[in-house]
Image 1 (cartoon, helix red, strand yellow):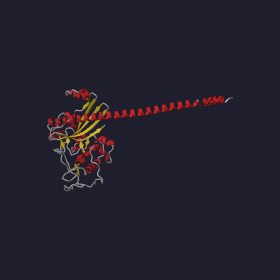
Image 2 (cartoon, helix red, strand yellow):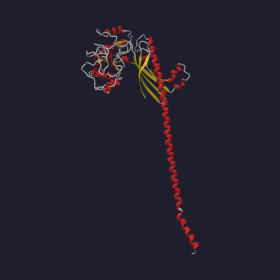
Image 3 (cartoon, rainbow, N blue to C red):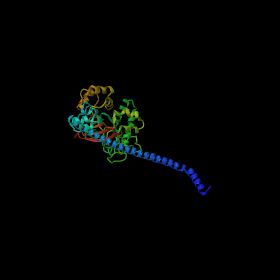
Image 4 (cartoon, helix red, strand yellow):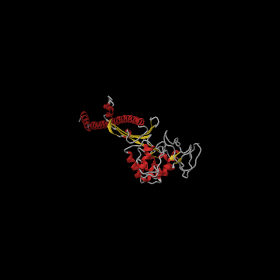
Length: 374
């Protein structure tokens, strides 16, 4: 065999031995390309998903902002109703007033169409509903603490007894009355409004528990002379009925039972005998039973009370002979109202509860506090 033939044979063997190498390289390249494509698809899909979520979040924020503006406009409309009621009702707040008519779920476009708004169709996907609640128809827990003299802050014996009667009529423990008064006083001890006994034209301070008085100087424990001491650390000022859960003895079921009958207002107030339920009237009128209060409420449904004399006559007709009307504790008008409003704007929903104060002299309204449930 010649050298050339041996060289050719060697080259042929080498060619046959090295042929699988390019095939393996092509297979690895295809797999790598597929992995790169899959990874790129995953990354692009993630980016698109995050972008879609961000766009959705921005849309939700826009819808929520629009719903809040609609709720603000509805509140302004409600305040206008309260002002107009104050101008035309001659200082009387009763259940038959325009303020007492709830608004069922209604399209915003229906309201806009009634006033001739050219863009009324834009509110076709927006719904409004709400109601107004008279807060002076309830027992005001702020009345449990009185300021009989400048710089003096004590528990009111009359109001504590009235709250105790209310608790007992609702099937609750009467011992919660004094504990609530102590909590209220302790929360007021560090408040700037602790000596504010009423709004202009409102109730003055009733008789207080404890005979001690003090000077007008402000201190950490102003005018506390009774045997029950406040806690070392003052609790937060009570601003809502839910704050009762901070007092030992109250449960969520107890608070739910009390909610239709009690409230917490910034100042002491009188009970509106035109709107108060029978349970509250029986509690605040000394010597009055629940059945007598129900008789008075039934009488009130035909003719509302215009003044204290009408209330006195109604009490006498209900069988309460010795009851006397204190203008600081009983009234026929209200200054505090709780406005419940619900706005549904496409996907966004806003539940807004607003405490509104109506000035009895000027009939102007002010927003005391707002609570949104989104």
